[in-house]
Image (tube, rainbow, N blue to C red; front, side):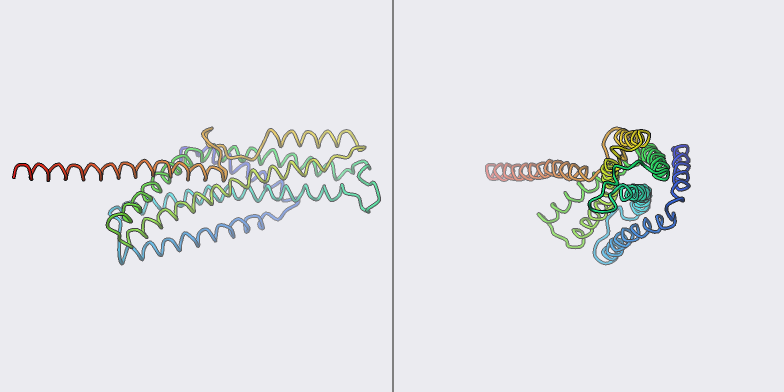
Length: 303
């Protein structure tokens, strides 16, 4: 609601990119690929839900189960929305890679011992390259708009997920050390797995944006014609510079970049805070034992 202006800008840029891609690509095939990938994620989450509800009905139900359920649904929908939008940009970037591969194949020698690569460019190659440059610029704006629309949402989702995972890890350790209850342990473990899966899917989708721009930059190097027209080679150089300066990254309000390495940082931070909580648990147990020992000694002395 607060980012309505940026969301409309995001939709406008998506429509512009779709109109540009209609010349070379079937847009419906892009959407079908995205939803096909999302289907497996929904299937995994539905499996978690069935097991969760089964445990809640038979053996253990969290004291805040009824209160947390609406928030869990909203959180999951937000994760799904952001993941779908990033995947849609990835599919558009793959269409751009396919268009570059067409130019690359046209630039290769037709026969093994010929030097067709030294020939000047054709008109369709120049027009095709200019079309690619325009789409790359729009895709870069799209990735920046994703940051503007969902930056604060990602920060809040990650903080909430981090707190929940650390808490459930601590509870699992406490259950294992003291009064073990299989239903409660499974419930907390499934909560961690569900949230961890959503985070991993989002970060894996964001990681593909970096892979796509690296692949695009690598293909552009193969398009130059050493003895070709200067206008064509200048366009290749400008496109390469554009890719270097307008990268496909999701930078969350300058705090961090969404990529798979962030998952490792989150795991390391979770272990650190978990160790701190375990230390408090151990120290509390030691203090309890010492207090109990002092009471026993005092009672024995008074007796």
